[in-house]
Length: 88
Image (cartoon, rainbow, N blue to C red; front, side, top):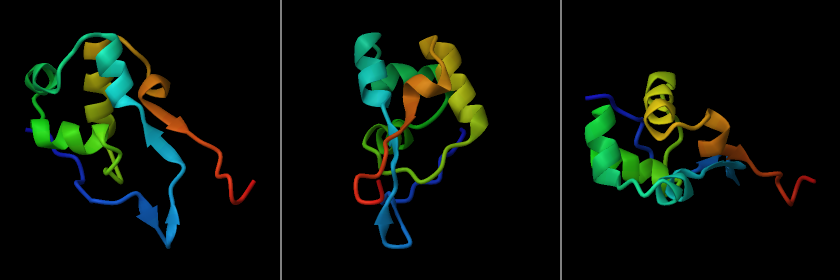
């Protein structure tokens, strides 16, 4: 099975990262469960949950490609950059 890098925080050098994963809303809009996506792209449900809950620090391009192909979306639908409020 493919693996993500299952780190448990979105912090780097003491500051919160402004990269967000919108997998939860993409799954909901397509009525796809974590289990269904997991089986379709051969990734553990635990790793998809890590992504869905914004606890991942990295994702492989091959994993992102599989997700986009299955969900019929683009990477920008899943990954977004939110401007850091503190740094303007």
